[in-house]
Image (cartoon, rainbow, N blue to C red; front, top):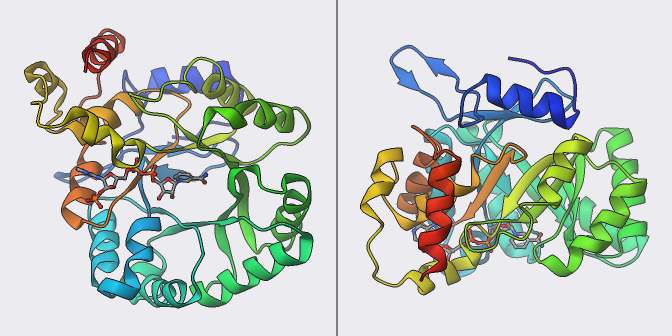
Length: 306
Ligand SMILES: NC(=O)c1ccc[n+]([C@@H]2O[C@H](COP(=O)([O-])OP(=O)(O)OC[C@H]3O[C@@H](n4cnc5c(N)ncnc54)[C@H](OP(=O)(O)O)[C@@H]3O)[C@@H](O)[C@H]2O)c1
């Protein structure tokens, strides 16, 4: 299925046309694939669950590349492709680059990266190092990390897009304090992607920011679905409500993901994990039915009581 327009009304119409979940589901004979969503204004679709790789990449020096390789293979085996990165340590990043250059992963991944430097030359140097260490001339998505030195780095990103070194460009935020500067930026520039924090316990982006991105025809990557783990600490040993099984939810991780995914503005949700088992559990949240509006309301009531 293709959509030619990026307006919010058309986007929402597209979403309702593909069912209450808002997900376009590819099927192959006898086997369901992870649902995908369209990058607005393009004919490209992304699987809806991705990996935030910071934790398993930062653990490479200590644990080797086995865990990150297993996590990436679990992502791909369950139909995912998006892997978000944040280059910081040349040793770990070089080892990670070897992993994503493996024959079975090289063309299976949509690799994103970030620029967190101050100054034009520092940004250029960080990007060149990422290209070298990741063994990729072209990165699928390059993002300005948390709006850092936004004016300067955005010009760098536009240059890389124009030369083909970045297929898509975008910006990230992970807390509400950056929403106002982000809105200001969106009045003058049109990123392909915005990455933003959103979950059942961090719903601040829901009413204004997510609809704004849909209006502007911007793809949305969600971060912090589990508040970097604080979500699980808050829930402790409480059991998942029995009624969540009605929409195929088997764990608290899936509870947050199944809350996020029905939002029509969302393109992909990153879950950070160093566990292949958790990666599979998170990916499986995309399959089966998603909660409808009434069920999502019931989910928020349940969570707000914890
Ligand atoms: N400003 C920015 O650009 C920015 C800021 C924050 C995050 N991000 C991006 O978002 C990604 C996601 O990171 P986050 O901070 O948002 O983390 P998160 O995904 O909200 O939470 C990660 C934590 O949840 C645990 N976890 C994951 N799946 C689980 C499961 N099924 N069951 C139990 N525990 C589970 C992980 O532990 P285990 O390893 O044990 O699974 C980890 O401790 C980051 O990697 C990064 O790519 C970007």
